[in-house]
Length: 607
Ligand SMILES: OC[C@H]1O[C@H](O[C@H]2O[C@H](CO)[C@@H](O)[C@H](O)[C@H]2O)[C@H](O)[C@@H](O)[C@@H]1O
Image 1 (cartoon, rainbow, N blue to C red):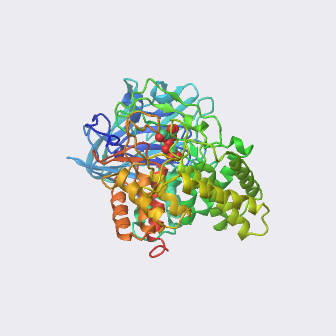
Image 2 (cartoon, rainbow, N blue to C red; image 1 turned 90 degrees about the vertical axis):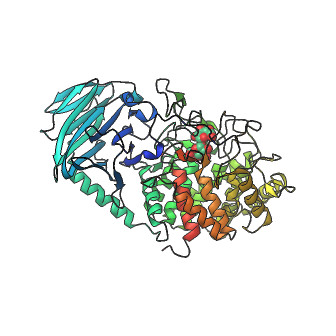
Image 3 (tube, protein in one colour; image 1 turned 180 degrees about the horizontal axis):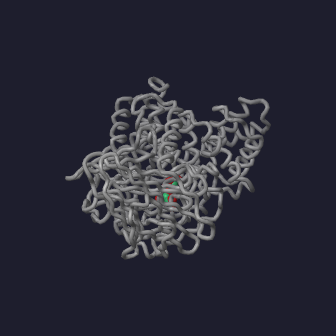
């Protein structure tokens, strides 16, 4: 099996699963088990990073607070219940200390708050801050102002503020501090970004910020409607999806990072800090299922703004505010996570034709209507324009949902999602006589697509749908056939496909999305990748829908077991080295977890 990573990965970076996420609904940071913030982009998710050690080393920017002399990981860590506030605890020879990390809800400027508290005995702590703007490449000038530290370089400025008794000093292009905390004593740091041409940012009260943040998150978590088994894992996934949402516009990023590799040492490293229509519509589905209508409405409105214009100009992804240009380029000065270059910014897939996206968007309009979101008068007009465009292009090959960089093909999943777009339009017209549209036209399109897929996308000899017309390759996305209603779950063509996909793409029970073997090279990329977590959740889903409930539950449990200690999942998993791979945390994986939980347990135990 060529595509599962082989050999020993170089052990130069902290494992991806060593990180926890904090964020302020506009950007986020990754905090390692040893107390170091190694990734932070400011002021937005897709801005340049000021801490990029994740993709290089400490000289590319990081901020570590930990007991002096302790180089290793903490003793334990956890999020405060139902929140995105992280506690990291060290038990040392002299005492126990906790560092609480958060990014408060943004007022004017983004802040990172770190509160150190002595829990027992006395512990001497060390803070080492290395600010490097523009993805780890620019060392700012540092100066003192009223006892605080100010960093400036080009458009960026940062203020480091702490209690007056904490002495900071500069050395080797870093800002250092050392202090001792006894039981019950607290020392707080606040790092604030602001545009360098603007006046100094307001000072945030770290202790109030902590209390407010806990209250906000817990109030949000209380609205969760899921009450079934694995409720903690489901809630953590929903919190993560909320944290990946850019509050000012409602856009949802696919992940918090760029270029975490899908194979250690490989080149499958992509920038996920943008809004994919596919990933976001699927997020909308699980948010609605869990009762989060406000977020779903914000995203639906974002979508309607983003897609405005000619339907032929619809993109498969946009920037956080709906920006259309996301040029892809590499950062040669960063060696990449565990020496996996290149580090890429932007994403060339923005220019691809991916037919499935139309189906996902139209399906999300239906979900929104069914959930009773206040209707947007022009949403139906947008839907009809999209359908008209799709009618003119659906017979063309495309790049598929996996965004292959090889030649376009007639991907079966793409055509199935074209069927979804036509089907949902027919169903809307049937259900609501106030909607205007040519129902016969969309019925004819729906039936034509169905016929063609069943004729050209199904291999009767092997009893399975195939990845593309006439191909022998399979694709885990075919598992979605019963979920979207293209065929009923017990149709032999569906059960045959599930079996075939499982046989060919399973590794250690988890699923690869397709084969990356050299002979086929469908995606046009060298090397392989790990098991794709969203697809593995789809397998649990498909097993359940076809009546194999026990197997579905066992697989779901194993998948939940892959979450790191704070409940987070990357895009992929390497079953050989038992580690997470790819961008982190990834919405797709968490959508898979929540979606499968609703499918497996929603009707019986969920509230
Ligand atoms: O495999 C090549 C492609 O990989 C990335 O796409 C993947 O991530 C997207 C965001 O989560 C997801 O929507 C897509 O289905 C995945 O295949 C990458 O972003 C692409 O540029 C790349 O061609």
